[in-house]
Amino acid sequence: MSDSAAAAKKAFGIRLRDIRLDAGLTGQGLAARSGMRNTKISRIEHARQNPSEDDIRQWCTACDVPHLVPELIAVLREIEQMWVEYRREMRAGQVHIQSRSTPLYESTGLLRAYESNIVPGILQTRAYIVAVLTASARLHGTPLADVETAADARLSRQHLVTAGNGLNKYSFVIEHGALEHAFGGNTTMSEQLGFLHQVTRLPNVALGIIPPWAKRHVRAGEGFYLFDEQLVRSEMWSGGFRTRRPEELAFFVRLFGQLRGMAVYGDEARTLIETARNSYAQTRENS
Image (cartoon, rainbow, N blue to C red; front, top):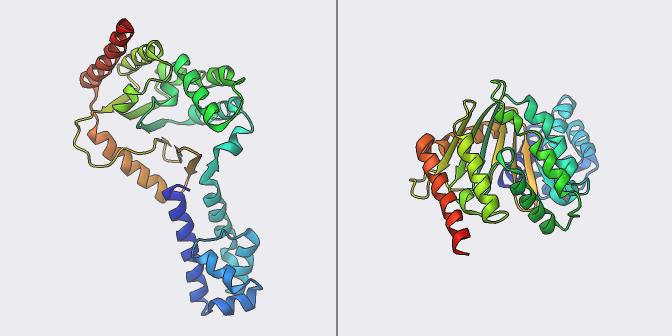
């Protein structure tokens, strides 16, 4: 579980404990009133067990705060959605995963994205996408048959960036390592970096690169995407974290600002891209 999801679960347990204490009940007292076992109450309060929605109803009824049931159930559902296992998601296929995200990108006025070791999805060239999705399918043991179609689905939203219609704005920050991790080989990377070079000149895009010598104010970490200030998504090895909770959104907005402060833009960013691109070209010549 991600740090943010675990923290949210712990905070929810503390809130339920406070509701019990405000009602003047011990764990045994709540157990007697609600019908739940005292050990279960303790596990819930210490975030070692997720309560069910029925548990929330019984808890609030026993503590004489039934009016809190809708709010607490909404928070519980939000916490449960904060962590989504890839293997469960992958059962629907990579095409489904890629296609369902397009409306979200279309409706987002400002997308802020950070990646530490990969090019942001909406900026990926087709060959690069195929290499990334193939690696993902092999890692998770899912079929390779739909990779090409899934790549087309992801690529279909790239026009939102390149059209420059003023409706969609983008702020990207990537670590220098994203330029060095060769998905698809030298030719694919050369093409990908050439596209990134073009993107730096688009009027609706700010593309920053954190150079390896930058003085760090925050460590490199998992990539994340901020869709306006309505949703944040982050992908890890085995699952994806997503939330609309205001406190989490505020945290990631602040984090993005710190990462952006370490990045270089414009000519400096283009120099880093060109240097990396030339290294791939030189590798092809020497191979």
